[in-house]
Length: 142
Image 1: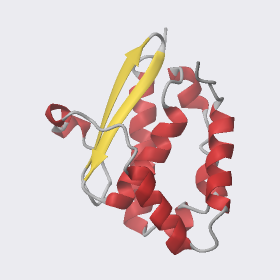
Image 2: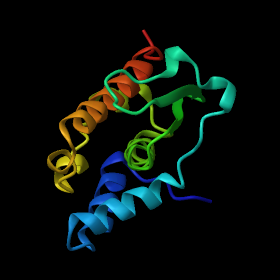
Image 3: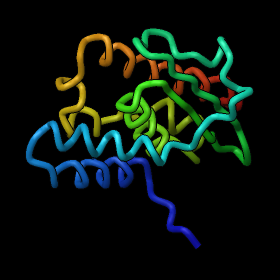
Protein backbone atom coordinates (compact mmCIF):
# COMPACT_ATOMS: atom_id res chain seq x y z
CA UNK A 1 0.00 0.00 0.00
CA UNK A 2 1.30 3.44 -0.93
CA UNK A 3 2.18 5.77 1.91
CA UNK A 4 0.20 8.96 1.56
CA UNK A 5 2.28 12.06 2.09
CA UNK A 6 0.90 15.33 3.35
CA UNK A 7 1.12 18.37 1.07
CA UNK A 8 3.98 19.67 3.21
CA UNK A 9 5.87 16.36 2.93
CA UNK A 10 5.42 16.38 -0.86
CA UNK A 11 6.79 19.93 -1.00
CA UNK A 12 9.74 19.03 1.27
CA UNK A 13 10.52 16.06 -0.99
CA UNK A 14 10.66 18.32 -4.06
CA UNK A 15 12.90 20.84 -2.26
CA UNK A 16 15.29 18.00 -1.29
CA UNK A 17 15.38 16.74 -4.89
CA UNK A 18 16.28 20.19 -6.22
CA UNK A 19 18.95 20.77 -3.54
CA UNK A 20 21.08 18.09 -5.21
CA UNK A 21 21.73 20.33 -8.21
CA UNK A 22 24.33 23.07 -8.13
CA UNK A 23 23.18 25.26 -10.99
CA UNK A 24 19.98 26.18 -12.74
CA UNK A 25 20.87 24.42 -16.00
CA UNK A 26 20.85 21.13 -14.09
CA UNK A 27 17.60 22.10 -12.37
CA UNK A 28 16.00 22.89 -15.76
CA UNK A 29 17.11 19.49 -17.07
CA UNK A 30 15.56 17.85 -14.01
CA UNK A 31 12.36 19.86 -14.56
CA UNK A 32 12.23 18.62 -18.16
CA UNK A 33 12.70 15.04 -16.93
CA UNK A 34 9.86 15.50 -14.44
CA UNK A 35 7.61 16.56 -17.30
CA UNK A 36 7.97 13.07 -18.76
CA UNK A 37 6.11 11.69 -15.71
CA UNK A 38 3.21 14.10 -16.09
CA UNK A 39 -0.23 12.44 -15.85
CA UNK A 40 -1.26 13.30 -19.41
CA UNK A 41 -4.65 14.72 -20.23
CA UNK A 42 -6.62 12.72 -22.78
CA UNK A 43 -6.42 14.15 -26.30
CA UNK A 44 -10.20 14.80 -26.48
CA UNK A 45 -10.01 16.87 -23.28
CA UNK A 46 -7.61 19.39 -24.85
CA UNK A 47 -10.35 21.98 -25.24
CA UNK A 48 -10.44 25.77 -25.06
CA UNK A 49 -12.00 25.81 -21.58
CA UNK A 50 -9.16 23.65 -20.24
CA UNK A 51 -6.46 25.98 -21.57
CA UNK A 52 -4.69 27.92 -18.83
CA UNK A 53 -4.78 31.69 -19.18
CA UNK A 54 -1.51 33.60 -19.12
CA UNK A 55 0.81 30.86 -20.34
CA UNK A 56 3.05 31.67 -23.29
CA UNK A 57 2.79 28.05 -24.49
CA UNK A 58 -0.49 26.19 -24.54
CA UNK A 59 -1.19 24.25 -21.34
CA UNK A 60 -4.30 22.18 -20.77
CA UNK A 61 -5.45 21.15 -17.31
CA UNK A 62 -8.20 18.69 -16.50
CA UNK A 63 -9.58 18.25 -13.00
CA UNK A 64 -11.68 15.36 -11.75
CA UNK A 65 -13.27 14.88 -8.36
CA UNK A 66 -13.38 11.32 -7.00
CA UNK A 67 -14.00 10.13 -3.44
CA UNK A 68 -13.70 13.66 -2.08
CA UNK A 69 -10.31 14.31 -3.69
CA UNK A 70 -9.05 16.12 -6.77
CA UNK A 71 -7.24 14.37 -9.61
CA UNK A 72 -5.43 16.48 -12.17
CA UNK A 73 -4.01 15.71 -15.57
CA UNK A 74 -2.37 18.13 -17.98
CA UNK A 75 -0.26 18.59 -21.07
CA UNK A 76 1.76 21.35 -22.65
CA UNK A 77 3.60 21.96 -25.89
CA UNK A 78 6.65 23.22 -23.96
CA UNK A 79 8.88 20.74 -22.13
CA UNK A 80 9.77 23.04 -19.23
CA UNK A 81 6.11 23.93 -18.77
CA UNK A 82 5.28 20.21 -18.60
CA UNK A 83 7.75 19.91 -15.73
CA UNK A 84 6.29 22.89 -13.89
CA UNK A 85 2.67 21.70 -14.13
CA UNK A 86 3.96 18.21 -13.25
CA UNK A 87 5.36 19.54 -9.97
CA UNK A 88 2.10 21.30 -9.14
CA UNK A 89 0.11 18.15 -9.88
CA UNK A 90 2.51 16.08 -7.79
CA UNK A 91 1.81 18.33 -4.79
CA UNK A 92 -1.94 18.88 -5.26
CA UNK A 93 -3.13 15.55 -6.72
CA UNK A 94 -5.28 13.34 -4.49
CA UNK A 95 -5.95 16.17 -2.05
CA UNK A 96 -9.26 17.51 -0.77
CA UNK A 97 -10.42 20.74 -2.47
CA UNK A 98 -10.33 22.59 0.88
CA UNK A 99 -6.70 21.57 1.39
CA UNK A 100 -5.76 22.73 -2.12
CA UNK A 101 -7.37 26.13 -1.56
CA UNK A 102 -5.55 26.83 1.69
CA UNK A 103 -2.17 25.43 0.64
CA UNK A 104 0.76 27.78 0.34
CA UNK A 105 2.90 26.32 -2.45
CA UNK A 106 6.09 27.24 -0.62
CA UNK A 107 8.29 24.83 -2.58
CA UNK A 108 8.19 27.23 -5.56
CA UNK A 109 10.15 29.90 -3.70
CA UNK A 110 12.16 27.31 -1.72
CA UNK A 111 13.67 25.88 -4.92
CA UNK A 112 14.02 29.36 -6.46
CA UNK A 113 11.76 28.53 -9.37
CA UNK A 114 9.90 31.84 -9.60
CA UNK A 115 13.06 33.97 -9.92
CA UNK A 116 14.54 31.68 -12.57
CA UNK A 117 11.55 31.87 -14.89
CA UNK A 118 11.06 34.47 -17.58
CA UNK A 119 8.26 36.94 -16.73
CA UNK A 120 5.92 35.18 -19.17
CA UNK A 121 6.67 31.75 -17.66
CA UNK A 122 6.25 33.15 -14.12
CA UNK A 123 2.90 34.57 -15.25
CA UNK A 124 2.03 31.13 -16.63
CA UNK A 125 2.98 29.46 -13.34
CA UNK A 126 0.62 31.82 -11.49
CA UNK A 127 -2.07 31.00 -14.07
CA UNK A 128 -1.59 27.26 -13.45
CA UNK A 129 -1.91 27.67 -9.68
CA UNK A 130 -4.98 29.89 -10.07
CA UNK A 131 -6.65 27.39 -12.44
CA UNK A 132 -6.00 24.46 -10.07
CA UNK A 133 -7.43 26.40 -7.14
CA UNK A 134 -10.46 27.50 -9.21
CA UNK A 135 -11.11 23.86 -10.13
CA UNK A 136 -10.89 22.88 -6.43
CA UNK A 137 -13.30 25.69 -5.54
CA UNK A 138 -15.99 24.06 -7.74
CA UNK A 139 -16.00 21.03 -5.43
CA UNK A 140 -16.05 22.70 -2.01
CA UNK A 141 -18.85 21.15 0.03
CA UNK A 142 -21.27 23.90 1.00
